[in-house]
Length: 146
Image (cartoon, rainbow, N blue to C red):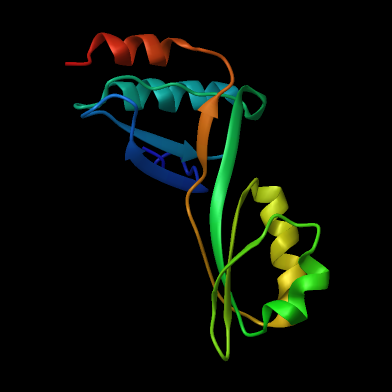
């Protein structure tokens, strides 16, 4: 579907939902509202799909999780990272592994701050999101709970 419409998926995350046996797919792509509605309706028709929903950025709270492997010590990076929500999760002789969970924009800032210290490796999750409002998905999912 996405390939035929030449839509680039920026992020894909699949995880269990609050209802046992139901998994939530979070698919992030940039497209017009009209095109998003069309692809949402097309996904809805797929076998095994319970329901699709689409939200604009202002309707959700979204975060991504990133691990950075940096060829520097935490002490060397401390001053640069002091005002950022970065956690040190592993320190070895020749590298440090840092972790962030925040918006994609903030992660770009963290990435830029770490470049001078020698980024060896980066891995990030797909965007995860929850809706601001108590929208119908919660009510519908509760109806099918065993």
